Amino acid sequence: MVLYATQPMPPPPAAPALASELRRGVVVLAVLSRLRTAQYGYALRQTLAHAGLPIEEGTLYPLLRRLEAQGVLASEWRTDDGAARRYYRLTEAGAALLASLTASWTELATTMHALLAGEP
Image 1 (cartoon, rainbow, N blue to C red):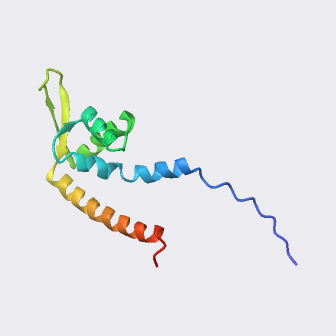
Image 2 (tube, rainbow, N blue to C red):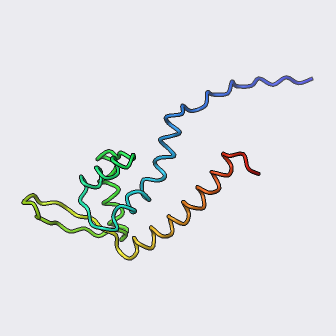
Image 3 (tube, rainbow, N blue to C red):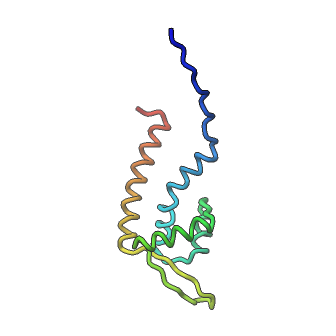
């Protein structure tokens, strides 16, 4: 008989860390969904927070710049209220990405709903 020493299993990650991972996966879709009409960063943050998805500045602004660099968003500076603000909106590529991600999200949500409900 051969006995093997086993390492104890590490504890599972904490629920908040896992919830944060789930949330991180939908931030792009949430941002794109709100930029069908042009918005500036602070207003976008407020809109998402009011809807139940608060996003830190350190997450939102780099994401907006990355999406613009990828051609998904376009931006322009406006001085409507006297203060210069950068407004972001979807490009045609962004609208196509939004449609694709929305279809993926809908399919995943349907599947997860069935799994969580215990359906076969």
